[in-house]
Image (cartoon, rainbow, N blue to C red; front, side, top):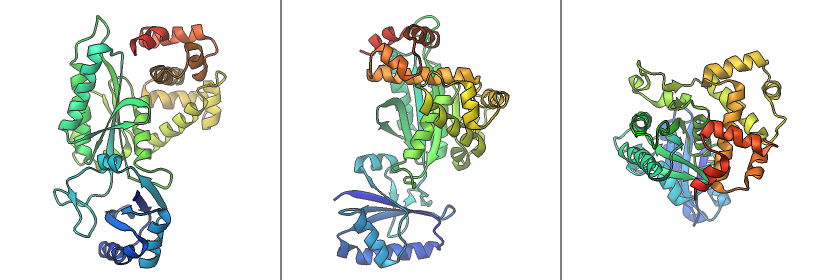
Length: 360
């Protein structure tokens, strides 16, 4: 039978009351051909997540309705293997909420590390990717793939392990010798966290998208850390580095601004007429205000950011062989393929056709 996860938010109940509700589900589940495997509880957030084997969503809902009336606000079908990668092993329930192996309550949060590599080809690319993957595994992380995106992504139960891994990856990549003079390995790292299911996405979709977006706007060789990872990382000293600003911590307002900024720009990248003036109007901020805000947050001017977003999308399309050079240029907002090639060369040190040939 399919596997589902439901999400209950704003739960006003004691720990024991939630456990009793789960036991009530077990009493009636057979009638609806449903099996409740386990559940996660986050008392502070008022969130509960149930993992259910059932013929369909309606059967999951029917059990809750009959047993205690607490209907979930979201029920999503999950892929068993993908779900196991995210949630991991090494926890137990004993007919109560899930706990980690050390006995602490598993709140359902998982931390997502995204590493973007470029300017690495051939054997050095294999070496760099292996360095990242080895460190994800050695820090108790699990490697996942996300659709067509070829960034390296790791998921961690613990924020401390995720941050330690990110810092060790940074040191490892900085230590790789250049492939040729001036051609060092270039990278950026985003760290996010999230819950397994929300009202708008399932299987940690929001957390992965945030990690990818943070990786997109991070400065070169920077680790950009979301507000939730900062909150979950109990080792505060780990987030501080007196010798470098390569770890940047976002607060909630900064994170919201970055998300709004990227949502607007990503939807308009194909429009050559989309300019910083247009962005200023869309985001409700004067051009000078926008310049100050973006420069302070991500160390680039708005124009540089817009160009970088277009170039990075072009790289993804070239890797996917999503069209010829002229078609990809149009897709990222360049009507003139020659000008697109010039901008691409300035960013990556080679023209688009040479880059595409190296991917073969």
